[in-house]
Each structure stands twice: as C-alpha cells, then as structure tokens.
Length: 112
Length: 173
Image (cartoon, rainbow over all chains, first blue to last red; front, side, top):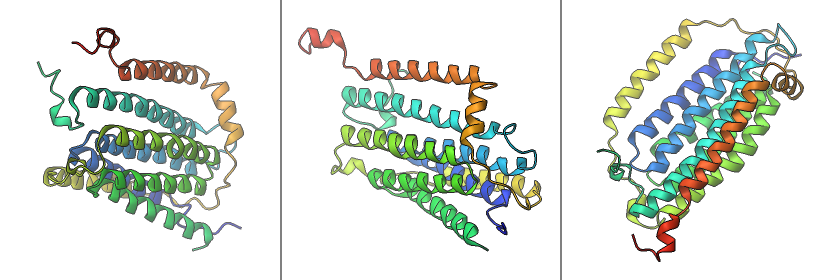
C-alpha cells in the first residue's frame, strides 16, 4: 500500500533540483573565494545527479534491470565530482603556496 | 500525505535551506558545513526515490570525502580568523538577476512538462541492477572513468607538489 503523492511526483524532485542548481550558480558567480566557487560547482553537479536519479520514477513500469541508466549517470557524476575535488584542492594549495591568497581575482598569471 | 511524503518534503526543504546558506553565508567555513547538510538531505531524497546504492555512494564519497577535502582546503589555505576569510564585498546584483531568470526558465520547462503522477512505483533495490549494468553495457564508460580518476589523482599530486628544483637549490628561485 503506497499512497504517497508528493514522493511519487516527479515535478517535486525537478523543482528541488532546479533550486539547488540556481543556488549553486549564484554561489559560483558571487563568491570572491576560490573554495566558495568550488562549493557552488558541487551544488550544481549534485542537482544534475538528483535529476538523473529522479527520472527513474518514470521507468518503474518497464521494470527491473533494463532502465537504470540515470543511476549509472549519477554514479559517474559523483565520481567526476570526486576527481574535481582532488584537482581543486591541488590547485588551491599550489596557488596559496605561490601567492599566499585564494582570491580568484589575483590568478592572473595566464592572462598574457 | 503519508510518512514517505513527510520525509521527502522535509529532506527537500532542508536541502534547499542549507543550499541557500551555502550560497549566501559570508563565512566560508559555515558554508562548507551547511554544504554537508545539503548533501545529506539529497542523499535522503535518493533514499526516498529508492536509489539505495546512489544514496550510499553519496554518503561515502560526497559527505565522507569531498567535504573533508573542502575543509582541508579551507584550513590549509586561509587563516580562519583573518578578515579576508569572510568575503564581504560580494557583488550580488548581476548573479541574482541572472539566476532568477534562469530559475524562471527552468520552472517554466518543468511546469510545461506535466508528468502524470506515477501511481504506485515499486522502489526496487538498485544495487544488483546497477552492478549488472556497470559490468555489461556500461563496462567501457566505467573503465574510462577509472582511468580518468587515476589521471586526475596523479595530476593533482603533481600540481600540489612543491617545485622540486626550488627545493634542491634551497628555496632559491
């Protein structure tokens, strides 16, 4: 007996995911701190993964093992976020070693 | 409204509230901690969707790994008690206008795509089908991601390592 209405509604997850995405973009655009920008990108990736998993509600009829593509993509997104975190930490450490600051406005070495 | 609905609603609400803290809190450390709770709530939403494996992966990798990495990056780079640590002079106007427009666009797309309420989805456990998918049709992308992870980690080590020549000459550039 499953009488859930909100938890079975795909639009609920899509709206939550859209809000998370937009907040992530605001965070990435407005912060003057490279770690803050990175956290905004994490929110955006997380919203995308939530979308990918949420559409699995549509495929419940088609059953069992055939339609797990969204979950696989969410898994890949999480792995890519982990790689990104490692590289971002490396860049932050290197930049702080060079400039003693993590202000992205001061990363001008490649400007030419 | 049953128990599942209440759980889904509270998880979604918590995710949105903590994500707005991530976006707007001036102190980067508090933003990172509320990012933890946002990711935890999204793991709760995965659990509501029946994606048990993804929820576990989210808990282990995001909450257990990425948050630790972010906290390390914060603690190893800036002095927490310095004033620069708080980014006060942020420009909100242009990002907020842009993102409000983006959100309205997304909302319009979501509302236009009217989904019939799925009457009774059976939330089957995900671990077995995802394992089968990863070892059959997704075997090649899985290997690609593994190789990418390896290269990413090696590259991160190379980037983060202090310059070898500088060390050898006693810090002289």
